[in-house]
Amino acid sequence: MKVYGFDNILSDEIRKSDYSSSSLAKAIEVNKTTISVYERGLNFPKIPVFQRICELLKVPADLFFINSDKRFMINAIMFYINKIDGNVASEKLEMVINLIYGKENNEESKQ
Image (cartoon, rainbow, N blue to C red):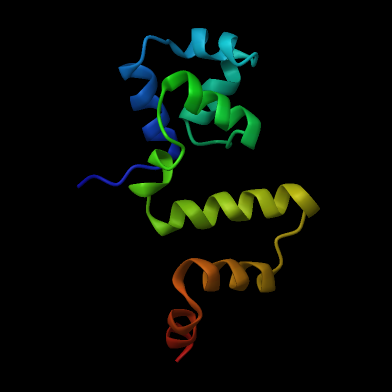
């Protein structure tokens, strides 16, 4: 099974839909460049935009996460932590890794 990140899944779902990147951008009232940025994995949509994308493409939100690997989830979480306070401290990264992999896995990796 091929592992896709958000960017690849979004591109695939746009291709399967009746939308082009431009028409999807217009429908969710963002610039075409914004959709391109999402498709290239350079940014993630805010939650309301993400929900609208799911509605228009007629896909469940979890589709974007079920087949994604844990690195994608860590990157997404760290991206939003950085956006919130502009600082990704090591303790925050450790907290995220513990949430994703489980505390016992992180402790094993330190040994």
